Image (cartoon, rainbow, N blue to C red):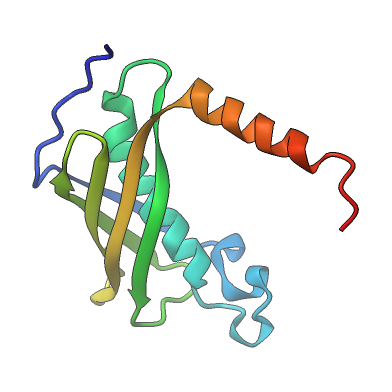
Length: 141
């Protein structure tokens, strides 16, 4: 049986990123907001923080995968601003990890939410994905 680390509630990390053109709404099809942080970019930064907080503590061949994310993107953030994302472990039951996440720019909070990840065996997950892909071969949709 694989020994997984204990992940303590309250464990946290802060990551930061300067908002660049590829992070803006224009890159995600919302051309009318070309210089503002896109919600998908904010979500990606939140997920990145959760992965950095936990995945390096896991043994080889074990990863986390996202199951759910729910956020509220509350305030606009412009090109060139720095976004800081704080990710905190809220609950850990041995396989499921629930995170609280808050995002800030230099002025204040811009978003918050929760994210759920599960600890899984990477090879088993990839095998199941391959099996699903095989079932799709030669399907005529």
